[in-house]
Amino acid sequence: MPTSVHPADSIQPADTVEAYYAPQYLEGFPGSQASDSVLDDINTLPVMEIPAAEGTAKPFVRSPLHDTPSMALLLTGLLAVTLCYHTGYKYIENFFHNMFSTKRRENLFEDHTVNETSILAALIANTCIVEGFIIYLAVQLIWPQFASTLQAGVFKHIGTYCGIALGFYVIQWLVYKVLGYTFSDKTGSKLWIDGFKASQSLLGLLLLPVLVLLLLYPSHGKLLLSIAAALYFSARFIFIYKGFRIFYNNLTSILYFILYLCAVEIVPLVVMTGVTYWISDIYHHF
Image (cartoon, rainbow, N blue to C red; front, side, top):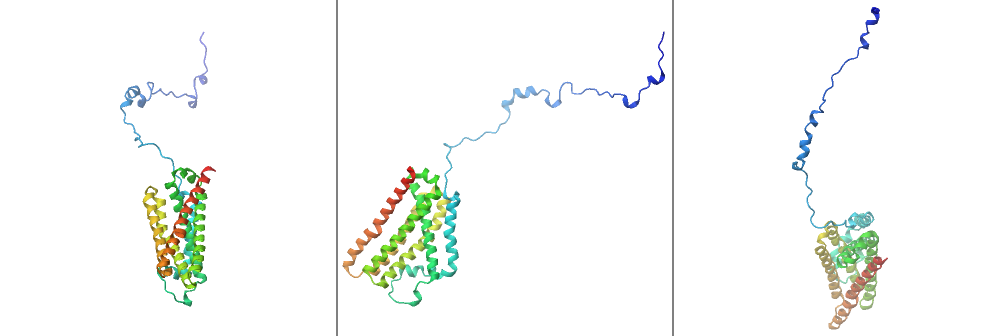
């Protein structure tokens, strides 16, 4: 017996009809098809090659140029000279007069003033700082065994070498004071000391460009340090020549002059070199 179906039960609402989507890419995505054939020839594909290094890798060398306290010290010396230049520029203009003049005349206008004293102190401080940097670089070249220790404590060593340069200047100034008082009169002694101060002040300004080149081009260290040494000995020679002109009176003066060269100009340099090596060795072991 057939079952009767109500007409309302055979009609379904439109929103309940499920849509049918035919599946696609049953064989996989088109881009991945036949990829196995590419993998077979992967060795034929172009690759980026890393160029071979020349020699062994070199470690980073710490330089004063990359040490903030050291560069701050150098800039402080330059800033001091810049600030004092406005009031003491006449002293810089008289560099060559103080270095070469041996005229024994009393002039009230040649007395030291406060402005001249400030620029002189700034110039001497700048010279000692620049010399400290150059000594730091020279020690690494002359005694390579100290290089690692120096690079581990850049500012400590540079500060020490600057102190050595300042102490050397003060000792020389005191010795020249005593010698001038002993072997000459007040005017001659003043001329001699003025020549020493002027030559050392100018030396720092001349060594500054050499130091900049040393920091930027350390590979040319031997050449640049040779130029620095030539400038130093040139300043010393000018000062010694002025002293000879001041103190020379007769043939007997030549003997005293030779003794002076050995005792005051040569021996102190040897002693300072030994002190520099000794201090560097102490830092190296501690």
